[in-house]
Image 1 (cartoon, helix red, strand yellow):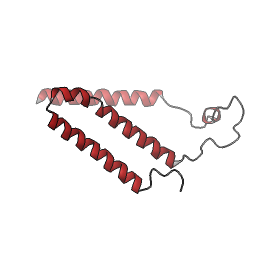
Image 2 (cartoon, one colour):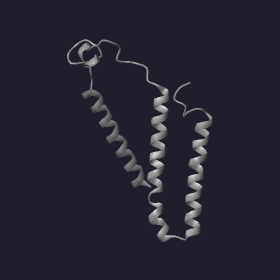
Image 3 (cartoon, one colour):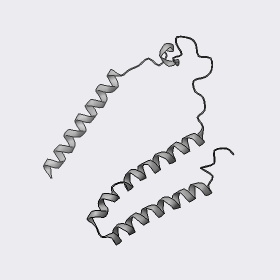
Image 4 (cartoon, one colour):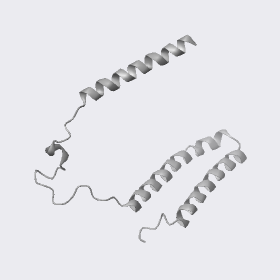
Length: 117
């Protein structure tokens, strides 16, 4: 118990020290105009660099990432199929794919997949 407490205390001291050192080192001037302006080949920007971001594009990107990760999760099932019973492999894979289809249906019904309104 004493070893655990001392380890936690030492890690807290080290992390607090590192945070203080980093905050002291990284002091930046907030009013530096040159660093706050966007870079456009040395010229003043023609429009605002803080343009609003399309939420539909963001949602499509998130959906793509989710399904991309799910495909990566499905890829090893081919190798697992050789190591397990066919019935248990089929149940797990079918359940996973059904969950994916239900999620896709939910997104479709909520209109997330519609690009234009």
